[in-house]
Image (tube, rainbow, N blue to C red; front, side):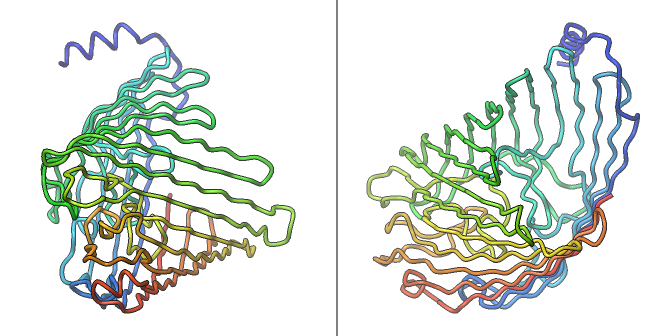
Length: 409
């Protein structure tokens, strides 16, 4: 393997001038506090919870020679007060977040191997999971070809399984992720493969082998931005077939010529749910590794068996201050499936309820950036349960408060 890599490097490499400095150091620190009242509408194991997160990310970027990059980033992530106990997204102690080597050649090819964060498109399917305290890293290899118009990535990865001790995180051998992802100005086209040894949906538990075909169209013009993405999934689950889909849209207009530069934004999503366990075909869409805070700050729902409308408006108040507000309403796409959280865990089974309405969410977020690299944020959100939640269990109004200080250098 090593000899093959050296031979490949010798074949493609040619003299080049390194413009980057030999070493660049960086650090990011985040302190965050969150409080929930009636989490999961009162159905959580600890519905009233108040806790703090601390995350520190020191990094070094080495360029020892033309075409060679070595990048390393540690993570220190700790939590205090999480009830009933800290989870892998809350705390991982001191560990390696990223550590990879990259070879770049003059013909547009680059090879990258090691532990790394992955970001593709709008992070609907493969993301850094930046919202929680512990980001999602992957172990594996990536090949990239870049031309004037296109960039094409091919990779094979295993997600990193986070553990609470120091330097004990490792690849999760029960899950695999591979992809061919092509992008150019305004267009993404991709295939993503995913395998999981023990997947759980309302239909049951079993081995999941899932394939996603997708496309994304995005751009900006005259104050408008847009992002439209669609996916079709097929494969097999527990001896049956998988047939699932999703459509996501996001359109924003910014009135840059007006005072406070207001913007309005509308998002709409339709995401398939299962049609019932009797036919053995699983129709629940799997977002695999979606971004954090997918539908806002309050974090009750993830992109599974869902139809929603989400309106957002914001202002630039000047002197680094911003204010935005949002309101969303959520329905079940299928009456035979329940609702899931962001990691894809079933949080409320269908329970035979004929109701589609999951509920309504509203939030307000005040931000302040007093200096470069410094950001403060205060958020309040509320989620009023709909008929489906009232039919199937505890149905109290959820309240959320979040406060965050972030510093980057």
